[in-house]
Image 1 (cartoon, rainbow, N blue to C red):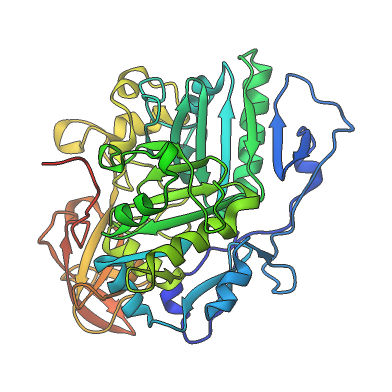
Image 2 (spheres, rainbow, N blue to C red):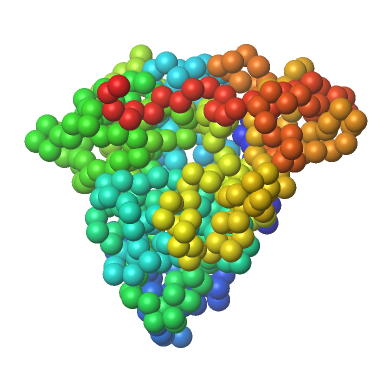
Length: 459
């Protein structure tokens, strides 16, 4: 499977390799899909009719078959430079701002990102909690309603990361999940197989909905709270000050035409390190909600932003890009995501790959198995190091490899993320990185590179 290249490598050509392919109906033969208001409801049963109807979508990288998000026309009208990404036409940047200007605007004001290419799901029913605890290391049982966070979908037996995901609890036995566009095909196949196995083992019913046609926008930056507050329906307004990072709530927006939007799923968080909100929008309201946010706030406060700024922002925040910093050969412990493994799960286990992952939590220095490599951050002198660049020690021996890298607009330095042998992972360790055939001095550093500004309540 091809991997998506970081956007910042491709600004000159505005072409991005896509990692998705056309769905195979035979692989989805156990799925019954009913279309209602563009919400494809998938119910998993112990037995599924052989003649079950299938709705598949084309996610080819061919520009003639790329899908369009509900906001495609809005992007074009605002000067968006469109590229193929994750099977969709997506804006890499806009004519109003350079990539660097857009990056800084997000850090100082607010930006709006279209992330509707991401795959949105709901899992509900009496077996939903048990199912999610089978495929992730998270403490789903211990989640409170309206809470959620980062997790990983895990490969059976090895604990390799199938995809990273955000899981939120909407209500008892009712969960909202967002997965990556570039992993769409394999994630749906994985979830189909896992639900099928779950049902065959006699577990309780799980209802899985893939929210086709829904929009997803990310409002990011220090002005995000004020901007969202200004458009909330006054009759059903939520006090955003009391809504902290990782929480999700249903909200409605007072639209420009005077009507009220359908209920939206709003999650406080994002992919930039700044305070912000990710807003899931039913198909009929996607354009109107987006325009309401843009026009009510004015360009002085809010600008559209594209994939390129999103990539540099997430790297400064130390966040992973699947297919580069995470893959099926990497466990959460190696990836520095041990904090996503719930406390109760560390003793009970029971999730895919727990037999591999749990022993890794105890380092070799303390008598445990530990890991051979770890994800680290680097500050690099000279030209930027890109994915694939080798990390070497003083003797010139390879000890690691870069997985993401770019010039940091905020720091004015070249930053990178990668994996390095266990003994070299401590912050302050000096190493070299081979860039364009030459050694460049580098130093291991803590991540995030730029301090995050998540809203966790008043100090």
